[in-house]
Amino acid sequence: MRTRAIEPPRVPRESPVVAMAGLLSVLLSGLLPLPAEAQIGAVVVRSPRPFGLFVGDRFGATVEIEAVDGFAPQAASLPKPGPLTYWLDLTAVSVAPGPARDGNRLWRLSLTYQTFYAALDVRRLDVPAFTVTFASEAPRATTSAVAEVPSWPIGVSPLREIQPPPVADPVEYLRPESPNPRRDPALPGALAWAFAGLGLAGLLALARDRAWWPFRHRPARAFAAAWRQVRRQAVRRDAEAAYREALLALHRGLDRTDGRRVMGEDLAGFLVRHPAYAALTQPLDRFFRASREVFFGRDPSLAQRDWPMPDLVATARRLAAAERAANAGGHS
Amino acid sequence: MTATRRSLARVLRRAWGAVRPALLVALPLAGAAGALACSGLVWRDGSANRAIAALEAGHDRPVAADAVPELLLARIRFLAARERLDEAEPLIAALDGSGSPALRALAQIALGNARLRQAFAKLEAGDLEPATPLVGLARQAYRRALTLRPEAWDAKFNLDVASRLVRDFPERGREQGEEMPADPKKIWTDIPGQPRGLP
Image 1 (cartoon, rainbow over the protein chains, first blue to last red):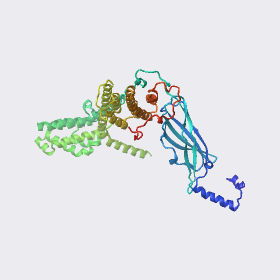
Image 2: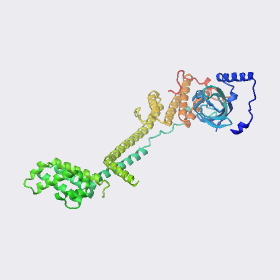
Image 3: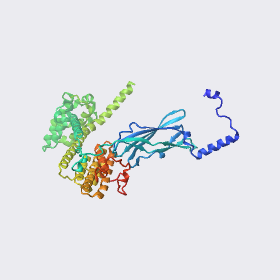
Image 4: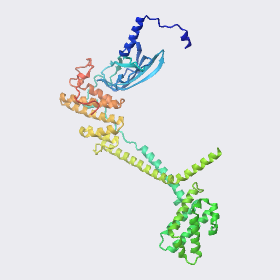
């Protein structure tokens, strides 16, 4: 910045008339497009392989347009994908700004064409010329300039000799049809096996957690075994015996959980050692009372009236659930 | 720091305790559902392959429009080989909706081949007039195939055959060595009123 300040002004002093004319030209430039040479520099068409093209081949071209910085190509003026001539389609167009240099910016237009020219011999064809309108991005001015992209040659090649050998049936000129593509069931098959393995592993984990069949006698699931036995007793016809058996099953569950015999007066100690069952203090207390009534009392049927079988079953179920939640990780 | 870590661990443990029972039930169910769905896909692929083999062997099988794309293509080829193109049209529309560009290109090639075979039959019989629009239809089909898949070499080859057909066929050898006209539009009549890209 400083060097510029030292430099003398480059623009020579103008007489008022010239200044007026300059102003007029600036005003006019807002309305009329300026000559393209002013804002548009060199236009170069590059193509990686513009020769040896067979019918149906796609080929790309990059058009590099140098424009004064601030000018950008207008999207509406770009060539539209679609048929250009009877033998040429434009399949894709994209534009991207390149690096700026000396106040000029290089715009890259990427074009993909497809030729449908069924050539009999190697020949040159011309890809049609087109124009791209550039507009200034300045907020008030609508200056525009037109870049002329020249037509450029490509070389198309034939696929076959000019006069193929005669055949009995002209259908023999055609390519034989390829075999039908088949479905490949390998991927869904592998996925099915993977899902089956996952499901089986999940089922094993569930069986271990609920102490189902191969894990029936899991020490960490004493109440699960008790609940299973209680459920079996609940459907028996002989209610008296069933109630006794169910009580015994719960006793066994408590004993196995604690590792020793648990009696009614040990309940507080048991709950201290196993705080997971603290929420079940009241049902456990009633269980011990019912047990005393049945095994040592005078009238065993009294216990069933006080603490009926459904309550017993519910307590067993809650004990099993508390057990699962307590030792989720589970030591065997 | 240690306190927050310990409380975080407790929160995580509690969350795990809440999630665990549901997860244990959901995992086998999800596995079973996935295995069933994938087995269904395997079965569908297997039955489609059997139907394709039957169609290739020349046994007609009815194919619904919602069949897998490969089976649609096999049926389209079966119908095209027997010049039952009217029946093939809805299947081609279905394939255009569901199939990959490569399969759609193969269907267009089959269509072009069928038209070209019809044109050959007319030319062999000496009917030059009706052969021309048939060749035009074949060329359109090959061109669509190449638009879908530029590396479809069968389509390129057959488009070349179709493009030279009328020039070569009527008086073989007459144009030999001549410079070929560069504008096939003067030779090929297009069907009027056909929007581009539509069958």
